[in-house]
Image (cartoon, rainbow, N blue to C red; front, side):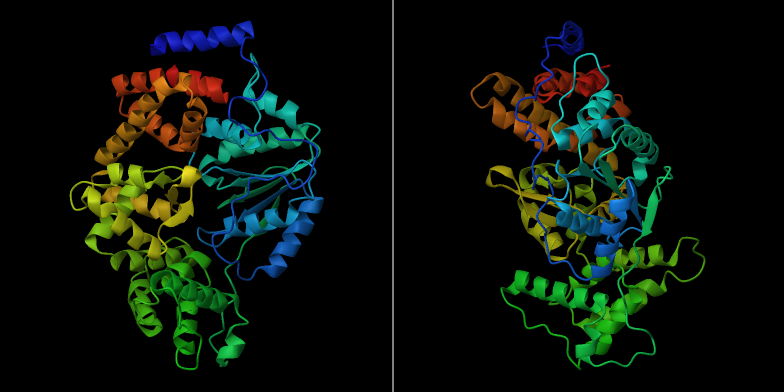
Length: 470
């Protein structure tokens, strides 16, 4: 169907009430009431420390409608929120639901992201926010809004609307800054505990510090991943170097994980010495907070140790929103410096160095993503490389090809599988649409619209589809 006709078709269907307000094809129902309902991801690694914080955040949520976990990038806001949320599954009769905002480029898409997480379908002739308010008005659930800072105005408006109408709703948000909503409780997420400069402790006593335990656990994990077994242990020989690393990285969890990722390639003493050089460059003349300098320094240090191929692919992969498959990574990430057949090997090196996370995807395929502070850093490197426009074009072409491949299948026997596949790449499709509109690539934009209308129809993304088409 031609894009102009698509817009009018969707409008006519909505106006005539022909689009069912029931669940769109392939979207999981939210069965209410009940227990144990959630969409929380499985933990990718063990959780270290924060025992007191978990207890106190749960206690605060019992008394406050909105709790915002705030702190610098890499301090562990998301991980703490997920651990709290997991403990509360079953406490809320209508479930615990995670909405990841980091992949969204437009604040207007926030209601769509929440509706998708909850399985709430659009209602003909009604704004999606009103539909959400009606659906949640009598529900008792916990909504986790992760990474609000880049959509702060939209998050404030949306949260105020929800809490003003839904008495049984609780919101746990993570953001680098407070939302400044009435009755919000802001919980500052501090770094992990670190031995003091004057402490002279033996190895067994050092494991009482959260930062040391995290370094040791991640070092064991990395060695097992690389070699199938691990001989790493905190001992009298390496204890002072481990402590120095944790102090230099000021207990910031993400920075410590980046440092520990090099165990097996470098000794702890070498890691400590290299961090002295990298973080020393940050002294003087900076106006950002010291903790932000520390995380930036850890990323700079880790980036500088990458090979040229690893650096190039690292930047290119930051174009993805919401993760990517190996096939998409090969299409978008290959080019000068990195050939298509080399992408898998280089990507695996980035996984080993904790710069990319590998997870089990749907239909037996692996999926990859970057933690948001790392992705933001990688995007800076991509912009510095002056190939951001070219990579953005490859990304848009990749997902246009997927949409056009799916279009004829949407009326066939495998329509459900194709709908689910497009839903899994929805954030990347949105990113691609933003790119083609930013660069006024009208032909590509129209082709996107023509290819996606059946997906928007099937999944209930009607108002969003119309906005893109207009």
